[in-house]
Length: 356
Ligand SMILES: Cc1cc2nc3c(=O)[nH]c(=O)nc-3n(C[C@H](O)[C@H](O)[C@H](O)COP(=O)(O)OP(=O)(O)OC[C@H]3O[C@@H](n4cnc5c(N)ncnc54)[C@H](O)[C@@H]3O)c2cc1C
Image (cartoon, rainbow, N blue to C red):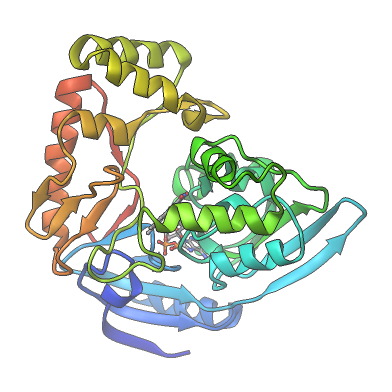
């Protein structure tokens, strides 16, 4: 096990922002992870588990502790019956490789999650989701190491307490476990989920009525790639959606709609109506965050090198390739203030802030 010092985290993040890790360890197996944790315990260091770095913002000062980067990769078919398979995902495997593998085998359940950056170890953490599919629909169980006791614990789906972009791994037990593997159940029986407007339009334009799983993956990758580059580049680096509103009830959504109608006119209110399908999540409705930012006139708003994305304003870009975390956080403060003043809604930051 090799523990390096003062390693820049910039190339390990899709934002391409941040200072160095005081200590950094690429761990090839469970034994190396345990040794790294013992090293951290002996020095009373804070530990951060780094996957693909696609959902974090690292401070310009860096992280004054030990970063563990699990490298164990691979996908394993662990069980199969007539209608489903159980696929075990190792934490260092790139997420999209798992999607491609499943699609190539005609296993349904994660095809709409094509081209989401990051590694499989991060999949359960924020209940990754897009285009009507999410981790909670497929996760069978998660095997994780308690970083304090070094016990390996198995969490069934219900134990993970998945809600919109949340699980125990980023709420109640944040920073407590290192995920060693995630097993997902995929269906051999076709289960296309084509409800989202962008997907409907894609297939309508091409007059495809009953798309194959391969065609669905193709559609999702084309739709996503037209919005942001995959994989992320240094210029226009980003961490996906940076701002996230609360999940709200149908009544709360009506209040927002009335406010939009009153202050921004019936056209804006009609646009909101057109988004309702894509806002629906199991617990209610997502706040239409990107739309609220647009109505606040924040598209393209820039502080230093950090800029609100023009086509999808919930995303903050490292527009110059030289943005600092300070730029991003100043921009964040302005956005939160403006949205609060205009709509009374408190947005949250979605990526984890590391080293602040
Ligand atoms: C362009 C772009 C588009 C995106 N689109 C989406 C989207 O549509 N839907 C969506 O849900 N997300 C999206 N994201 C966010 C991100 O891709 C996901 O959250 C992804 O799962 C993060 O995985 P990661 O390996 O990069 O995790 P990291 O960014 O490295 O870490 C994120 C969090 O997970 C923890 N973590 C990572 N690995 C482990 C592990 N093995 N054990 C314990 N904790 C771990 C980290 O400690 C940290 O708290 C997008 C990001 C980008 C850049």
